[in-house]
Image (cartoon, rainbow, N blue to C red):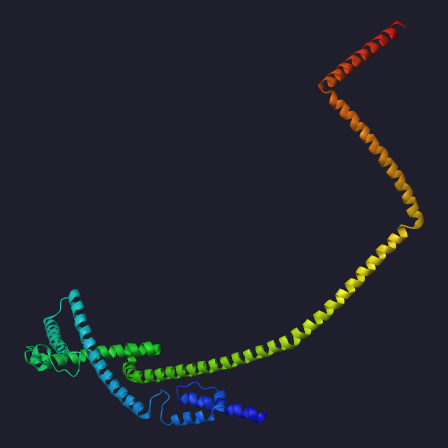
Length: 362
């Protein structure tokens, strides 16, 4: 049992190592089932990076990333200076709307704007999207543009004032970034310390970025691990359910069916026995109720009832015949009966009157 657990642990560790070195998703069971395939995967780890690239391609990609990083750094530096100069010009224009600028400021802004415009023209000369094509707009070059720049002679004097102002603005922004990153550095007396901290911001941000990337990688690994554990747990549940279903079907349900069959037969036999007992009790009651003497008495009573029934039938026939005779007389008989009833009523009234008269005389 201990050897089996040790083997499972080694397979799990081996699968995790290979999954980290290559973009694959091995299970511990795969390591044990396919040893030759594991040898092939292990040999591939010496030729392929975790990203799936070969060593040579990964090296070229690293060099390309370094070159790109350098170019992006140069472009961002120029972009930062360009944006700062544009903001400086915009600030002077906004200030000119509020108060009147002195002649030096007006001249400074005008020369700076013109020099910036001439410099921007060079960005439109190389209009082809293909970098291998050297055709320029109207056949002009940047040297041609700068040669015809009337403000070229003022660039040196312009830089004398522009560079300190841009440095001050950038220093102020760096201090704001430091204050944003650490609000405790808001003391204006610590300007040198704040500027020193601003120079450390890229390194801090890079460290923070790497830390976040590392945490993201760990979270992805943890998620992959959890997914593997979930599927292992899910498969275990499926196996348990299959085994449980087998136990229920083969043992519980089969035994229950046999038990139900036996119970049904026993209940049926008991029901039949109860029915026979009830039938026996019914026959016993009938035998006790109708004895020989009782039957003779009932026969005598039946004879009397038959005679009474016969007499009743005869009376019924006679009355029926009389009613038929009355019905045959028709409407005249009914009028005679009514007249007879009326005369009889008058006779009774007269008898009553004579009786009353006689009583009054007496």
